[in-house]
Structure formats: C-alpha cells, structure tokens
Length: 306
Image 1 (cartoon, helix red, strand yellow):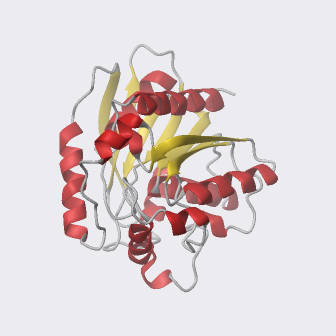
Image 2 (cartoon, rainbow, N blue to C red; image 1 turned 30 degrees about the horizontal axis):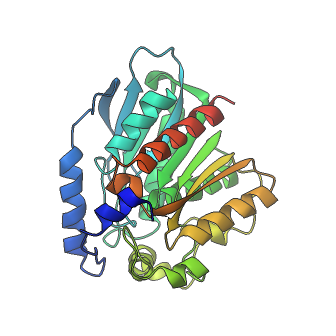
C-alpha cells in the first residue's frame, strides 16, 4: 500500500454499515469538518432549491471565478453507499473540479436509502440532470457540453442516469466521470471475495449496502439500480473510470470499462496501485491523492471540451 495511506489507515476503526446510525454519524462528522470552507479555491458557490420527483431537491452550484462563459457543466453525485452523505461530503472535490477543470459543477442532494430505496435516488438525480439541461443558460453552462459524474454509489447513480438519458432520448450527455464506481449487485468478482477487511470500504459493507438500496427490488434488479446489468452499453457518452487497488469494487469498475470499450464507447481507465476505496477523500493531503484529484480534473476538462 502507498506509505502515506498505510500510516493513516493504521489508526482507523472499521465503519460498519450494519450500524447505520453510527456510520451516518461518522459520515456527518466528516461533512461538518469541510462544511462551508473554500480551501482557497477561486470558486463561487450558490444553492438552488428545485422541485424533485418526491420532494424539493437542493443543488449546490460551483462556478469558477473569472472564467470565460458559457462553460462546460458537470452534474456531480456524492458517494456514501446510497445511504450516507450530503452536499458537504464531496465539497472539496467539487471545488477542485470547478477550478482546475474550469467547469460549472452542480452537486445534487438526493434522497437516501433505506428510508428512500431505489428508485428514489435515481429519480432525483435524473430530475436534477433534466433541470440543469433546461436551465443551462442561467447557470452559464453550454448546453452542448454537459457531463455527469460521481464517486462510489454516486458513480453508480451517474452511470444509471447516463443509461436512462440514452434510453429516454435525453438530456444529451457529453461525458461521464465514474470514480471507483459501484456497478453490480451480484458481487461475484475476485476483488469482492478478497477484500473483506480493507480500509475505506470492504465487501461485508457492500452486502448491507445493496440490501438497503434495493429494498423490495432485490429479485428483479434494474440496470438503473445496478448499471452492470444493462444488456448493452452502446451509444453512451465517453467515460473516464477511476479504479482503486485494494477495493472490493475494483474488478467491477474494470469490467464496466471493458464493456464500454467493447461497445465502442471512448473510455479511459485509470487504475491506481497501492490505494483503497475513497482514499483521496480520507487522506487528501497524500501525494497520491493530490495526483488523483488532478487527474480527475484533467479528464473532465479534456472530455467536456473535446
């Protein structure tokens, strides 16, 4: 494992998703530590309340200062195993993407399972994408250069919404940013079997995550819940997939990239050795984390301006 990550990981206590209240407390403590901070980034943040399919949705808009408008836009979906997280969870990543990629980032605060199992979160993210596309001009976004992205469960929701946008005839997406994506509820990969006690996330938590997210849909799983179940990945937008090494979801991320390539979808796959799930969120000061953030911003800028 990367030496800086290994030092940090030695002091961690395993987060057990079976104790959801405690897992959410840990997640909220992390969110509180970054809430409202700009980290010196030259980015303006505003919040907008829109009508959602189940209740109102809060969107946080990150607009880089002094950029030539209109800009590409990226709808960003936070991680958290479908059951944790909020707009603060990946506030730092959104600031970096907005400033370094010079894009307008719109982060969505979707409903969480198990109180709101699938398809609630999916419906919220798709509704947010439709709203962003319809209001692109007022957001200083070029409507022909809109992407979607997220990490972990947020990447699963992003990939699912990209499938829905293809199947439903819009909105048109130019790019999908999938950071260590969750894609497959079947959990049959070698990495899922191997990584049962890893930092950041482990396969035991994955079992609980899918049970909470799928709820009554566990016997007939939609590709809009688990994108790996899609019969075809053709005609999807170009993708950048970021896979961590010691991660139960490693192999399903790599397999999803392979299927996209086989479907003739332009795809970049970046596999980072010596890392674990959500490493750059947990240890942002590590050199490997700084490189990861920079690479994600580079890919976002490149593909949304292609």
